[in-house]
Amino acid sequence: MLLKTILLVALFLSFGEARDVELIPLKGKDVAGVYADGTMDILLKYHEGSSDDWIGIYKEGASNKWENIVAWKWVKDMSSGFACPTQACDESYPRFLRVQLEDGDYEARFFRNNSFVLDQKLNFTVKAIDSFVTGISQTYDAYLNKLDIQILGTSSNATATPEDWIGLYKVGTSNNFDNVLKWAWIGDDLFKIGKDSWDLKSINLETGDYEIRYFLRNSFITHKKTTPFHFIKNNPNPVMKNVLMQTAQVYFSFVDFKNASGKKTDWYGVFKEGDERKSTNLRAWGYNSDGKTEGTLKLKETEFGRYTVVWFKENSYQVLAESKLILIRDF
Image (cartoon, rainbow, N blue to C red; front, top):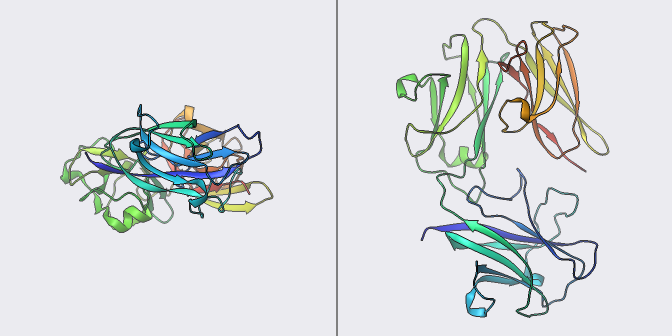
């Protein structure tokens, strides 16, 4: 069986009755969470515990007998230093260190007082996957003629598939290598950092829509691709620049734009990082109702996350410009 890595179980105390126990999968972009192969980090919420409380990992359906334990740890022995993306925990709470598991269905089980009487459990599945890359996004700066690329789903616990690569293509062209306008191997460094920046000045692009495609194992089969960006030869697109102002509770983001057409049917939309540019994914939007060619958009989000502001052409979803990523978080 193919071995998979699972990082399990950060634990913290919360308010409630002693028997109110809850196992909660953690989710988050910048911290460990639910991974592409189905593994997850798990919070254990309970009011008070004893030095003999423990966690065990079992195959799904196996009895609680000692010989069926795949991995286990006393709660008191779990390490500290886990970063949590919610207001309910901080860096001081303990975590269950990752263990190697074969593909299959498992249960994380919580027991009290050194017993084998099950208190709570959480099911999860470890499965074979092609890649830990869950998406790829781009931000095109028309003024600098630069393309920032971000690979989503990367982590220090996942390594790139050998000979993975990315290529710049004109939308609508085949994956044939003759159509590649610029390319690069992913490599360990790019995969771990998760981003790259390309200068497009040396590429003689014609006006049109372009995208970045991600390929696995030196193949020409698209694994992931970015939303398209629109390039206008010898004609600057709108340019947007982020200015973040910290407040007591949230970040306000001021996104400056310039070189816009001044058309009142041009509009902007706010998207979560990696979301497809479509109406169901809009977090906020508005028209250039004053017909400005430059100005400032003031945004406010209360939900933790990373966002991008996209400028669209005349009631369409033709992308003219994108802001850099905006971080919104609670304090």
